[in-house]
Amino acid sequence: MSDRPLILVADDEEDVRDLVCMNLRQAGCDTIEAMNGLEANDLTAKRLPAAVVLDVMMPGRDGFQVCQMIREDEATRHIPVVMLTARDQAQDRIAGLQLGADDYVTKPFSPKELVLRVQALLRRRATQAAGQTNLHVGPFEFDLSFVRLTLHDQVVSLSMLEFKLLHLLASKSGSIVGRDYILREIWGYSEHARTRTLDTHMKRLRVKLRAFSGWLQTARGTGYMFKEPTGP
Image (cartoon, rainbow, N blue to C red):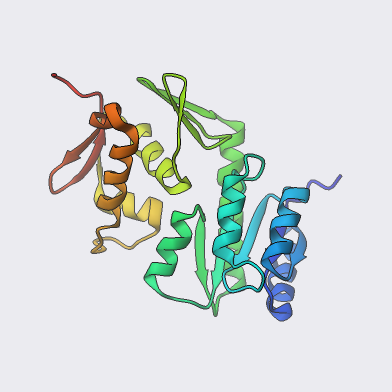
């Protein structure tokens, strides 16, 4: 068995698949190809690639749907996904990340940059697998292997993006985490981005955490902090 990471490249344009696969192979990866969304989901489930490069606009099933299905399957939800698309609308980027994509590259793109992004995701995944896969803070238990949060042995249903956001804050428990830092780490936004995306997701998290929502504290004008609430 090869020790080269297997990357699935899904795009309905053959020349794009050829270009991406050639550069990935030159960088030390093995590749498999899918020409539509249905094939992409089928190959992901059967081959369990180390990462998926996923075009948004594909016949049969678009990239958003493919990504959502990857994240809903317990066996595949940990696989890093890079969305590749000609669409450069902010709402498309947010939609992809909300569904659990790890990165987002817009066509036309630099093949070398795409390869570097894939390699960065593979390193991050390897670090998680080799290091600590669980994080315990108070009643919160984060399982990075299965992207799962439990509270007092009850699984809390979170999207991939919500899990990443909450885990980021919990990993810095007791410290204020700045808005710009959070936007950069979770959404890849530049500093001082004017967006209500973060606040919207924090509201959703508080609703889902119910009685434990007090752990998410707002530092006015600065950011947020994950800390055990005090008082009644």
